[in-house]
Amino acid sequence: MDLKVTTVKSKSDLVKFIKSQWNFYQNDKYFIPPIIADRIKLLSKDRNPFFKHAEMELFMVESDGKVVGRIAAIKNDNHNIIHKDKIGFFGFFECIDNQEVADLLFQKATDWLKSKGLTHARGPLNPSINDEIGTLIEGFDDSPQILMTYNPRYYPKLIENAGFAKVKDLFAYKLHYRDFATDKMKRLQGLLREKYKVTVREVNFKNKKQFLEDIETLKGIYNKAWQMNWGAVKMTDEEFDYLAADLKPIAEQSLVYIIDVKGKPAGFHIALPDLNQVFKYNRSGSMIGAIWHMLTKKRTINRVRIMVLGVLPEYQKLGLDAILYYESGERADKLKLNDAEASWILEDNEMMNKGLTTSMNGKVYKKYRVYEKAI
Image 1 (cartoon, rainbow, N blue to C red):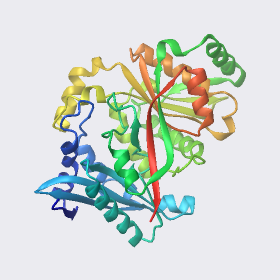
Image 2 (cartoon, rainbow, N blue to C red):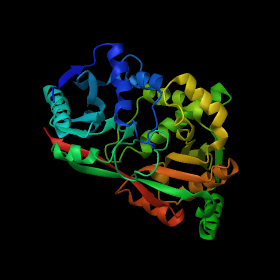
Image 3 (cartoon, helix red, strand yellow):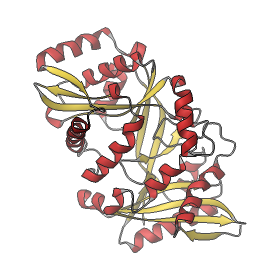
């Protein structure tokens, strides 16, 4: 093949990079088109606060004037400070089923990472551990839920043939709210509420002052509860506020709540209606189209993604996750969101995996893989 490599230098290049994604899913009924304006915001170095501590280079490979592959090379200074390593990242990988093209993309990305003094390449992260991550390796017979990745079946082969090996797998669980709460779980969460004086309160979306205070509470819990997880990087204040502003318009208030123990915040839960069920009709990726389909088809949404569920370290062995699980089911059922996905969960997160299988009767139905290689 006659291949040409280009780097993204202008806004028009960035739009080309984003729109090229359609090239790889033309006949894939499970593909959910991204919203172009959202992708521009995510990848814009002057709009996404992630880039205040990170660098990124975007590469495209073209053949006969058509983009046949793309990739991002990412240097995340906060990751390397926290984990005391020199790991670089790749993300936003898309490619035709051609090893020559894939190898060229990975070569360009790793060369750039090496030029920054990094010793390993890990991915995909789009662009960080706090965003969409992983390559789908099992569960191709369903569309991705909101803010989860999706890719053709041949991507793992291209990545592995380029010298990458598994560093971690991530699980997505399927749950049915109407049958997950066993009698044992109902009794347990009731006893725990009484024993530890647990109360549940929704994040206040309507009062700006209270909303900002609640966001500060979520921020504090998130950065403490997840700090020991593999690959975790604390979100800066700007990053968390950026994420909260993005999620607020699409969240349901009753599915975003905090649990207090004797009046002190101990954990929280965030779930989002799976808007991908309506975004699948927005084939052009336009913002106007996305809004239109949300307004006209939102009632057809029948599933929800449990995106974040966690408890502060000092409360983690009290069983309070049972209350979060129970509330999740009760609240989603009232909204007629009967099915759920809990994602993503680290394969070696024993506490979460045990809770999802034994307490919620969940089953792993999708697996994602994060790869790494020395460069």
